[in-house]
Structures are given as structure tokens and as C-alpha cells.
Image (cartoon, rainbow, N blue to C red; front, side, top):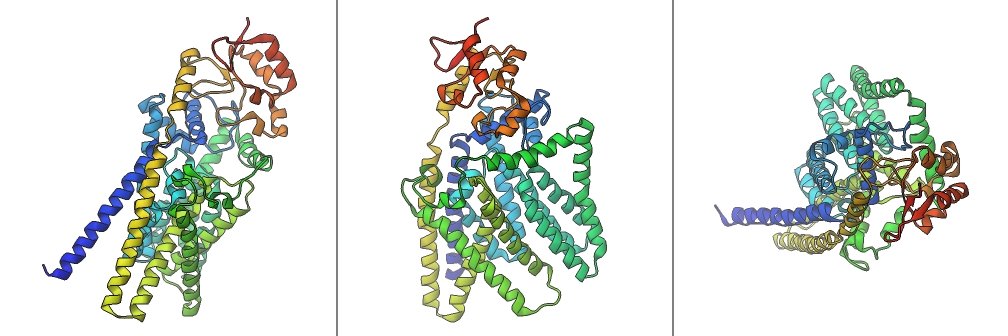
Length: 499
């Protein structure tokens, strides 16, 4: 083995060592950072499905239940305990790294190997992705299914395979049934693939693609029609969801998360290097996307090959998804998941493109070594900062919430209904854990009537209230509570029915 080969192998080993350290810190952050309110809410929905409660009918539900059905199967195996939440996090972590692997294969096919390799650390260095990418939320299952669908679709087009394109259609449709927010990207995929097939005289592929997309949708509609809740499902997932967004008192925007001074997000106070990174990633991706589009039009290719088709598809998907999450009222951090993997992909294209251009422009061996050393130094510095931030974030424990909820469980029997609803206990009023009654639009509250009617109907024995929650409860219910409940002397915020 000559010196050059040895040096190359050492660089590769060092790269994978750094990547392993970064991945370990990401795993630690993903597993042990405190549970978000949304995560606990999704687990509660899975519990309610397992208990036989029907979404849209027994309780208000603004999502589609596919993700929660998957969660309920997992919890049926591991049990409904607080420690099971960590197992659910581990499941989401596995899903996250599987998605990275599938994305790697897709990017390798669309671009090339070097871009696919660089994509992985660029994504793992992104605080937005690390923060929400392994949380217990449907966004992550949706993106995994969507990415697998894209990979299969690219191979279906290359192989002109009816079976593969049908399977791709099924997966893309399923991703929409996990979470509706992926619909714009799926629409872009459908339009561009259909146009390509028409231009290439492969119209039969469109038929199979449409058949694949329709199959899950028709089954879904049939299932909820049989359950008698299809109108309620449409009402709650579309109309009510919009009403919730419109009623937000202080809706956030994407720019809020770019301000820095967010320890939970960046793992540091102030504006660390990880804050600089979240600005670099979309800017680099934008530059690469513009160049990709420019090269496409400059080539004046009448019929693009599959790789070029998917480059344009990813560019358009990125633009459409970004516009969609910017204009929506009420932006939440998990919305970045829709675009962050595309940012990392095109940022990798940017890095490879810039370094290749410099090496072509200045074909000097010394300059090449300086350039590689500079890139390696930047990568190491950002990795060190990111690793420390991930470990800092992992120190934000959920022990306080665990102690609180396990204390409630000792007081409240498993079958006892409460108001407000708590984890792994049934509900009385149809807005369950994760939905604060003060956030529910008045028009929707009227549909279910005052809270006290549910308390009286179920003869609810225990209420978990404080003065803040009571300011959002209707006056009739507050009078009913004062007349029928008394606060426990030893437990602040717990009300017990008098008779």
C-alpha cells in the first residue's frame, strides 16, 4: 500500500469516526431530551384507540389516525407505562436513521456518491432536524414513507416497471394519509412524473401510478364511511384544523426560530455556531437549486433523463413546501422537517460544486490540500459544537413531568375519567390531552356544549384544575365545580367530588 492510498484510507476512517461521534450525540439528544407536549398527546391518542374510543366520534381529532394505529400496536407490545415512551422514542430514532439511509440511496441515484455521503453529516448537524426528527410525531413516519416512495419511483421510471410505480403510488398516497401537510409535495411529484411519462410515450405507467395512489385513499374512504364518521373526519381534519390555526392568539413564524437565544433548540445560550449553521444550510441549498435549474434550461434538453427529472422534482418540491409552510398561519418547529432534508441534499450539492470548481480553476496540488484541510477543519469545529449542544440538550430531563404524572396515577384509578384528560386515563369532555381548552375556537366548543354536562353525565370524581385553566372554562361549569367539588387539602390543583 503506497503512501497516498494509506493517507486516503486514514482520512476515510477519520471521517467515519467523526460521523459516528456526531450520530451518537444525535441519538442521545433524541432519546433523552424532555418529552414535548405533542409527543405525549400522540401517545394518548394511541392509548385511546387501544381502549376502543373512536376518533371523530368519541373525541375531537384533527389528525388522521394511521400513525396512532402504528403506535398503539407498539404500545400493545411494550405496555402503557411512562417508561414505554422511551421505547417509542427509540422506535422513532430507528425510523429517523432508516430515513437517512433511504435518502442517501435516493440522493446517490439523483446526484452522485460524493453528494450522498456529504448529505448525511449536513443533515445531522442541523439543529432543527435533530430537535424534532426523532420525536414521537406523525411527521417522521410521513417523511419516511414519502422518501421510500420517491426512491422506488425513481427506480420504477428507470426500469419502466408497472409493479414498482404502483407501489410508489401506494406509498406516496399513504404518506398523505399519515399527515396531510405532505400533499403539496406529492402533487408536485404526480404532475412532473405524469408530464415525463406523456413526453416519453409511457402513458400506461401513469395509469398504474394513479391506481397505486387511489388504492389507499379509496380504502380509507370506505373504512370511515363504514364507521359512519367520514363527514365528521372531513370536518375535524380540514375545517376545524383551519379554525384552530385562525384562532391562534400569538402565531409564530419560521423567523422566530432563527433569532437564536434558544437553549432547547441549539443547546447553548445566545447565538452559537449551530445558529450560524441554520442560516448557512438554506442559503447554500438555494444557491445549488438555482444552479440546477439554470443548468437544466441551458442544456435545452428536450427529454431529460431520470436523474435530471428528479433534480427538478426535488427543486420544485422544496420551493412548494417552503412556500406552504411560510404562508401557513401558526408555524411550528416540526414544519422544518418537510424541507430540512432537501436543504441538506442541495447544500451537499453546493459544497461538492464549489470545491470541484476551485480545484478545476486552480489545479495546484498544494491548494488542493489547503482546501481539503480547511473543509475538514470547518467540519470538525461544527461537529464539536454540535456534539456539545446535543449533550447539553439531552440534559433537559423529563423527570419533573414523570414525577407529576406518576403521582396523579397513584390518586386516579386506571378506569377513572378526569377533566382535563391526563396520560393513560380515559376522558370525559371530548378534548383530550394535548388540547388546551383555551385554544379551542368558540364555534367548536358550542358543538360539544358546556363542560359541566360531561362532568355530570360521567359523574367525574376528580378534576385537575388551576386558576389559569378555570379562566377559560364557561361560567356555568365554574359554578357547577364550586357547587359539587372541593379542593384536596394536601394536593393543590386537585378537586374531589363532594358526593
